[in-house]
Image (cartoon, rainbow, N blue to C red; front, side, top):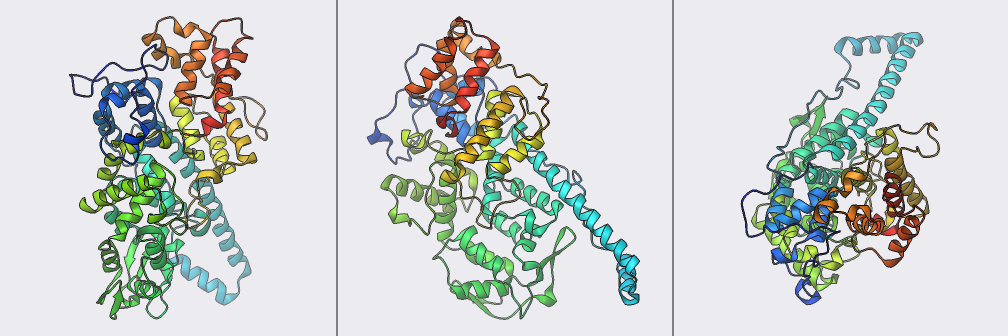
Length: 538
């Protein structure tokens, strides 16, 4: 996200920006009573620095001091509109030829004929050459999936539309598909593009796209599903994990849905409907009877009220407050404020015919989203941690291979989700091993010192943290030279309302520097801050 453009003209939300270092009154917080569960829009007077910072972290990957200041000065309406659809950052579609689609291409007619003849003649030399070529291509494809991972990671870091990439990450976890199973890097790239195309668009359109997606068709074995031998995997996961949730369908609905999806396969990189393999018989799905195909199956699902409740619950859990899985906590088991919020979001989703943007706008503008209980309480996933650190602190990007390896060690290997359920998230991100990696990768970003196991030579790109203090200097000239003021500023920028022990740790470091604010001191502050448990939250 680039620095948000300066506001022009005056709006009801416009007012001077609040700096974390300036001696100004903190934005007035409504009482717990008025905040609890209310989906009413947050008032401009209640939207300040902390709220803008919260919005940028949850709807993207954090913000620089200047971005936080600008959104805070705009107020909630303009800030949310900008985050959802940045006017100066039109969406771009990556080229289809960005990666090689022919690494695992289908054999030509001549190649198939030669292979058949070699088998018939038991020509071991020819067969060995064929196997070597297949292994070479498979190795090349494994290299390319790493390139796709690094490309996506770099895109998340550099995009002027962070919400779009956050939604691609959300859909990747929702419609989880792993390269480990499909072993085709270009198909994983195509699926990533599908999620980007519909990132904040229409859920129904995305679901229709998913049943035509080569990666998903291969991952859930629908590519070989045919009349008389229907595979139930895709039908089951569409209902259980993608649209309705457990309890919203019967086992017979799965069987009949699987019949409807027979013949839905692909050739090369394109969806193919094989009519001869499709079961055209009468089926009964969710109370509807007819000679349904896969598209009709999706259409029937989208007619169910449970879709709105299920999908908005997942969105709420991703962006606002983590909820237990549906099988562990039904709607009525949740606290009343969350029930109220979920009802409101489901109603918005249904009335908009499954458009994502209205739901996000409703959530991001609500008092509930900014309830103190929902702020600084969500554990950053590995991708959000790394991408957010680079974007918010403006560190060098450094070696993408090392960053990608760190994501894997922290439990989020992009394009390799552990199962069709995606990543568990939440507290599962944190243990002794992953905290060690989190601290090491933050040190790498800040200092260039490579984690153990890599070439001992440090990354030579030096990080200059002093521009982080520019907003501080604007709001309160001279404060950027005061070590205590700088530590307070950085804590508020990175953590929010820091506990006393966090401040004491930074004061102890400052006492050893002779009272001057230097590049080394600021980096030292950031090394301490990014190792704190509070920094793992947003």
